[in-house]
Picture: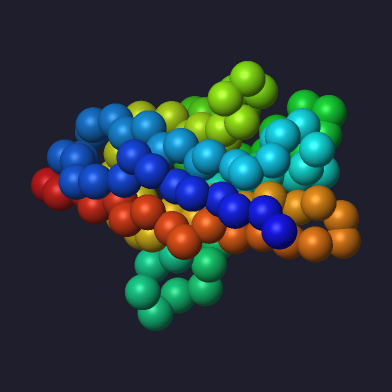
Length: 115
């Protein structure tokens, strides 16, 4: 089985930056897809950004130009650099990985944005 562990969440002021990291228990190059999703209480979990092999990246329109998804092959981590944070970005952020035909999820990390 695969474990995904997120870290880097916390409280940040609007306009600030935060970096999230997801540590995987297997080589991340073995996953077909990896990504970040987020969920606000009372809403559906939504896509933030994904990277599909070999290196195809997609972002939600709401984060384009502000967030950057990246992989560190040597460290087996998936990262999300979040800049120019808005109050609307506050949510629990989840790491996702697909090793076809199976899907894996982390436990989530809380991001709070204050004004």
